[in-house]
Image 1 (cartoon, helix red, strand yellow):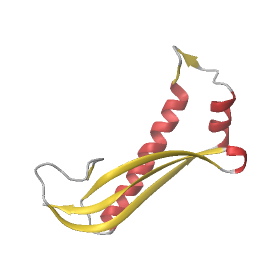
Image 2 (cartoon, rainbow, N blue to C red):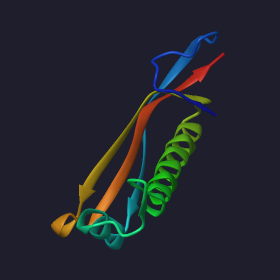
Image 3 (tube, rainbow, N blue to C red):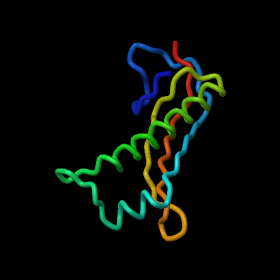
Image 4 (cartoon, rainbow, N blue to C red):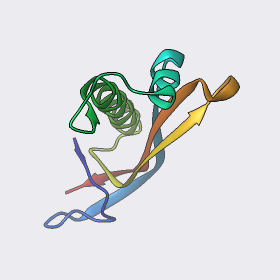
Length: 106
């Protein structure tokens, strides 16, 4: 399935709009607490462990969004937006959400 941040797909015609689709993934409390409290595995100003966790959460959110689009009859998602939010008691978790519009393209 093609997912894009653009409102259209070049070379394709949108034949049908199926509605808004969303996917979410939440990182556990330890990841966020450790992230904001002080990162101990920083090499060159970056934290590989946290970047990997965020990447996995983003991939889960995108995959879930695409599955919901397919369930609605879509074969693509346009206008994709990714958001990262701290949630939970005392900001103990991080949520990654992906949203867009499920469409059928020809």
